[in-house]
Length: 358
Image (tube, rainbow, N blue to C red; front, side, top):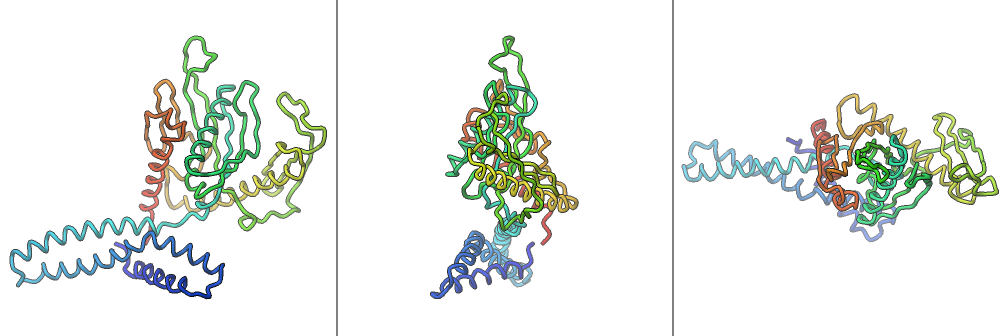
């Protein structure tokens, strides 16, 4: 059961926001902030009102059942009504609890995704490219924009590493559970005896930080410039346009050489650095919270094997929720991605509900 005063406060605040937004002289910044809160409450207000009404009806129905003068037919009707009301109460409580869960401030942010080939040589690089292509297709289906920030090609095809920015509505909330080790099992084109090889790639999804999220002091940075190089080490630029930024306190190093302009490379490197520092800050906070609970999904441990893509069997298995889809082709095309992603989100939500203190 949820305390009545909490629900009454939701209804009261919703009514208050309606009155505020109806004011003709409301300033633009106040309108924006209040509209956002109003929109969030609007998703749950009907359940809040229904919950308060259900509690009133439950009280009335229980009084009827406790009244010894109630005739048999009316008593039986009240018993049926009580059963229905309890089910309605349960549904409202579940919806309201989800709304009352602590919000992740980063969920609405854009994301930076980093994919690196792991064990498996050339096959791992090809798999890294497959993963990036999958996320690109997911982005198209969601109306997101993808911009490659840094790309390191493998001589045999695929990517040693690729870093991209994904911009759109609620990108981080939809992709944050992709961080971890992705494993592939398939027969490489170069395999003459049909043996299945196992390779891996690591994925890191970072919320794209803004300047207000992380303050970087120039005194904490060491910036080195060098000449860009391509595959095999050959020079691809005659000027020192590549940039390496080292954040001295944390030891984080970001290199950028995709642009011909040193200024643009520095800007991209700082963008990645800011997101890495923001992610580090969030990880430290999450580590503190995790001491009080155990979650199989939201750990964000990037050394954890989270998913296996088995081509001979046409299946994709997420090891965190023990869910297997025999839709590997559809999954890599982005079409079945939502099915698995939603299942992960639901289980994470259920774990949060178990730890929710109201």
